[in-house]
Amino acid sequence: MAKTLLVTGGAGFIGSCFVLQRVLGGDTVINLDKLTYSGNLENLKSIQANKNHIFVHGDIGDEKLIKELLEKYRPDAVVNFAAESHVDRSIHDPDVFVKTNVLGTEVLLRVVKDWWKDLQQEKKEAFRFHHISTDEVFGTLSLEDPAFTEDTPFAPNSPYSASKASSDHFVRAFHETYGLPTLITNCSNNYGPRQFPEKLIPLMTLNALAGKNLPVYGTGENIRDWLHVEDHCEAIHLVLTKGRVGQTYNIGGKSERTNLFIVNKICELLDEIKPLGAGKSYKDQIVHVTDRLGHDFRYAINCSKIEKELGWSPKHTFEEGIKETIEWYLNNPEWVKNIQSGEYRKWIELNYAGRQ
Image (cartoon, rainbow, N blue to C red; front, side, top):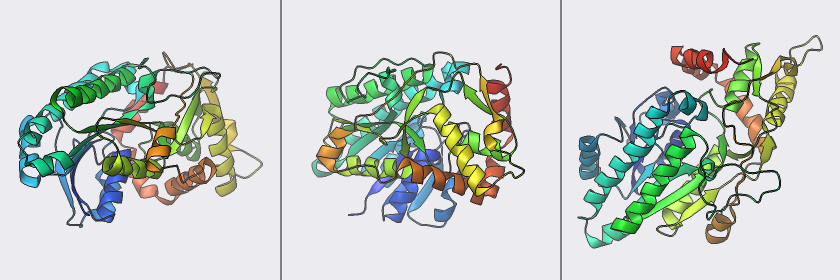
């Protein structure tokens, strides 16, 4: 049955993938996005004329706007992707992460709660507030530690992960205090088409193609679990429609890799797909730079709960997904050109220029 969804942050990397899936799946999506540096309407170009996609430029902290959207469209669910999401940016400017991820989420929760409590009983019981979060709230692991479960205590180590942990706590509190029917999902590192190129895979891919250095933090031995964005968004929809109210579900890709492995893999694929010639390899562009402050060593997700309860598992292998992702960037030069704006260039200069 088609639903009406209010999706926040639906022009960003993960949010836009979810919006595309749901609109093409027959749902109506009211897409609220502030369009900061990583929000990109080009991500949604294919559904620009689709009557089931209604874009609204705005902020989750705008109480008046949220109230108007709830009253006008009366959604069956709110799915909250809106967040500042890059650790390095949070180290340079923690304040904006508190403003959006903590205060913005609280405003959204409060306004939704006040609207929800006056709904007719049947619609009230069917409504869901789904909050998208990260595995980084759990802190860091050693090589020997078991993967994060839904019961792993929070131990955030960066301003970004601290802000997301706080927002998770607010979502849980609104369920426990007011009965708001909430769901939380905590995911591992996402990758795939249309990712803003401050993140590892698009940054290294585009730097390699431009003949620039490939800056690897420290030794490059830090480990992440990699989840294809399309698998992630399918899991979100499954939790939204079939998950148990008040529960948290971990979503992982079952693909733990070191950062250095990822960069080497990108170079190997580019050597194959777009060779430099003359016996050269993109690996020659790899440089090791000063490590990130407080760099967590390893993240790993145990997603047995969502597998057992809802029957979900990732469809993409990492080897298939990374090749498909690199080919997407190669085949979409106009998207790449438009995304590499002054804001992007300023960020690269700020974050990498001083590293030795």
